[in-house]
Amino acid sequence: MSFADIIETEGLGDRSHPAGGAERAAVAVDPPRDVVRACRVGTFTGLARALDRDPAGTVVLDVRRDSERAAGHLEGSVRITLHEVRARAAELPAGTVWVHCAAGARAAAAASLLAAAGREAVLVHEALDAAAGAGLPVVSPARARVTARQARARTGPRGGAVLLDVREEDEWRAGHAPGAVHLPLSALLAGDGVPEAVRDREAVVVCRSGQRSQKGARALAGRGARAVDVEGGMRAWARAGYPVVDEHGNPGTVA
Image (cartoon, rainbow, N blue to C red; front, side):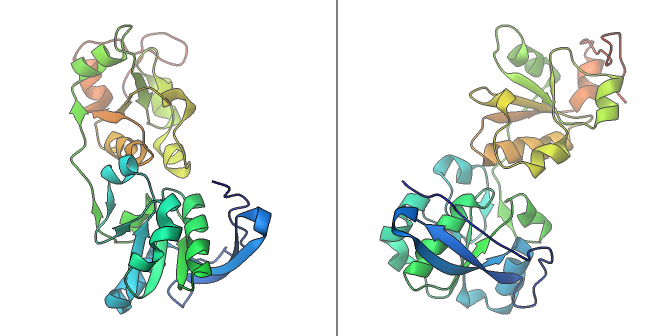
């Protein structure tokens, strides 16, 4: 598939556009033929407003893979993968189609294909993590959780998983599990892919008490990674008597 030069937008500093939170953008698809179609660029907040204003005339299209959608999806969304959009565009209900993926790139290509087919399309140019914050209902399966003991076994020499610590820098410096990989939750959510450290390996996500780790595991699963989180977090790890070291390798504490 030759999708390149996916999207070029300007003037997106203010994303609270009055017309449903969307602006015009030029999206290029199949560059060898120089096909350029105009579509609107919006946010999940704009989508929420459109659904409130005209639910019957607003179609939500999810172009992610099966593994990504299984980790969570917008309630009421239609699912057609990117490579099927051209052939199945006629199956979409009537109305304005708001297209999303995990971070925006595939949605840009799909929105352009729909525009080329004569549909009114809006590219949701945001990470899916922002949907819940916009008040949109996200259907999520119960995320698998593991105990501190299970986490240690999975991330040990025989386990092969990565212990991913999503706490902030000061918490990490004060004390973390030896061998853990540090990636603050804010940085994880700001990214749009699977971190190098956990590609092709299971991520066992840990935070202080088990709240942030659930968000981190959900975000990774939404991007196609295998992820679980530690119930009770580093507090449970320390209570179990497992080692905690500070930034210098000395005995640390769970801040």
